[in-house]
Image (cartoon, rainbow, N blue to C red; front, side, top):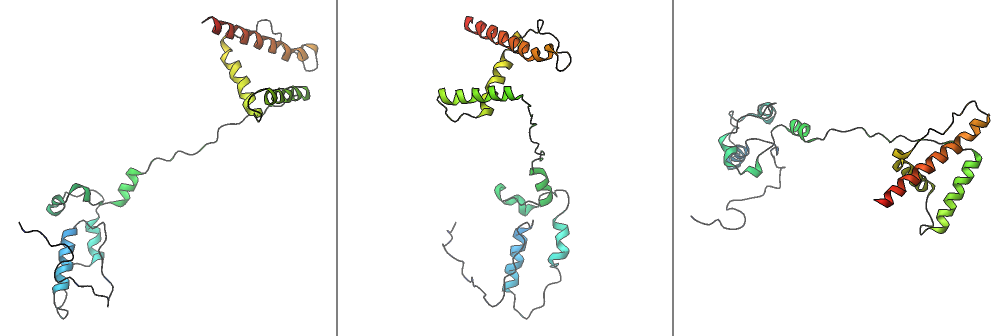
Length: 197
């Protein structure tokens, strides 16, 4: 078998007088279109166009059917990696991931009494002053407190926490303190068990 010479084939010429008519890259019949273009270039300029070659606009619906047609012998002879995509809209529909609407996580707002806000500010300042992280954020400290309470959730017992009662009564004022005592007992119990394990 003779080896092909490198470079352009003999008889190749570039026509700069008129624009080139390039086919669509999605054409199924690539080899047939190439043969028609070469035959049209070799034919004399005075000959009439062949009636057997349909215009691109009328042939396009036949080349892009909604379902995948059986492979022609010309497509079967091409390598697998050059297989053309026949229906571009179908391929986009198959490959497009289903978009999940972005939903922001819910946020909570806590209302604190002035005394509580002052105590929380003092805790933040204490952590910033005496820990290695001098720019610790209030949200990080609040996350740490909540995670400790959540970890001790199984140890919480509220049997000695009285009902709040009406606003302004002594029991309503004592309710946060009693709740805090229950939290403290739960945290102490949880971490004493953790030391024993």
